[in-house]
Image (cartoon, rainbow, N blue to C red; front, side, top):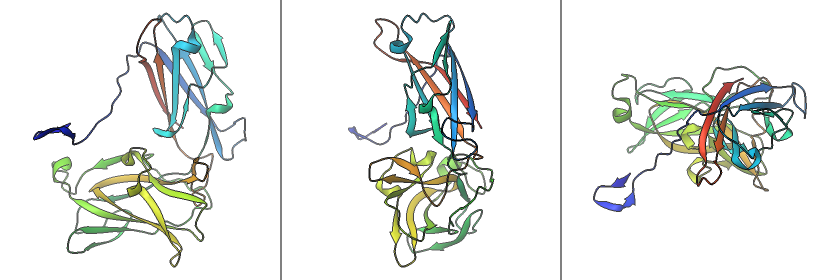
Length: 276
């Protein structure tokens, strides 16, 4: 979308995908993985029925993407299939389709600028913005189930009226208690960060208070989020304060692309999502 007064200046970009559903893909998730059993990981198995699509060379013509909670940063791309059964490709016991389980997403909700709601300690006007101070997030040493939205968000206000247009912006203050800084950079992550590790989502460590802090401008609504770290080698990991627990509920997505012989594009021919 471009500025109506300046056709060369983009205002925003919205990305989307359209699936043809020409093939069928099935997903299964297990905590009995090839790394450990009922501990820190979850493993994904796939079956792809190529149906009536002509595929002469599956290894070249079929491409796959497997994601956890819609995250592209740790997506498993083009993992080789383990076996073929007629028109069915099977991925089973593939070590490359093992994900760290993580922990349940944290959440909060700000519905108006006068009254704090779920997860919000207090609201304060600083003369320019309304500031929403969330309760301090404490380290989680054990798994405790908490129903969440796996990173999703929903813009709305207390009146539930013209939510997208009339919901105000507030400055949201995130605080994560951490006795010592980790050996890497810490970021907020959720569907609303669009899986980007950008400066506005980075947590900075306060040595005196022994905690990570970030302030993000967000619209009124419901948000679920998690803390991730990027180590010195650039690998994205679960923040040590959160832990990885096999019981964690995650949503896994599979995208299957197909390129016909002589074709010039990869077509999205199958999509599936499963929550485990």
